[in-house]
Image (tube, rainbow, N blue to C red; front, side, top):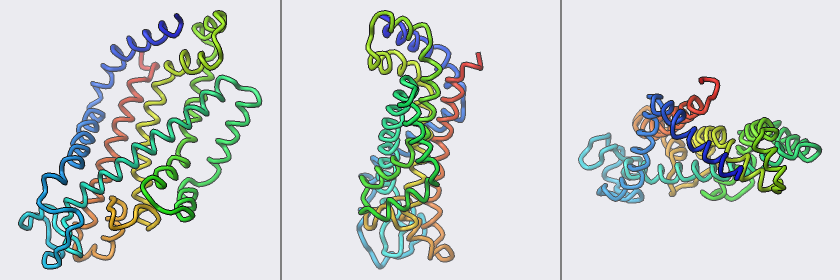
Length: 290
């Protein structure tokens, strides 16, 4: 009964106040539109273009944008930049979303247990979080990426391993503030198990900060994948990603600047849009605005 009441209250809260606040956040709506368009372009774009992302035409090397049917130009091997951009977007966005899901799952599990149980278990879990946070994340990612065979799955795991700690901290603090609330006390009086209370009573009421953290984690994951691929430790050619497209373009900045500008713009749009969405969700879930 308490779970039903808590969830129904949460649903009413989202459907009224939170939804209105989010819909009034113009930058968040712009971010959602941009992400939807970018995702749609990456999913459908390769099927609408006349060239494959791996098709090589040495006669069309370094064609500038809007040259014939090469809408975004070609690279040093004559490959169509638009086709490679959209295929790279599939990989970069997939890595970003997958890393977000994995890191959010790990961070939420650790945070809920640490926040609800407390005591020596909570202390041990949070000191583990502090231990991971003591390493600069970029060095941790580069060390793991250099030690492991690079692939989209491995890069996703590496990014998730370096990103879950922030989620765990947010969830732990939120759960700690909720564990003494009336609906939790009622659940204990009814004899509900600790697992039931953690995941059926408390977790639905802590979903707001988790959603915000997950949204911002996508942006960080996309940026991190681009960074390590740019340094040569991430997605390896001929498989394209926005990061290794930038890596291959750095020596042609003076002669073919579009090779760097186009994937750089895609990364900027994706990261900025997710940050806009995260800001909108944070404002929408902020109870202090009432």
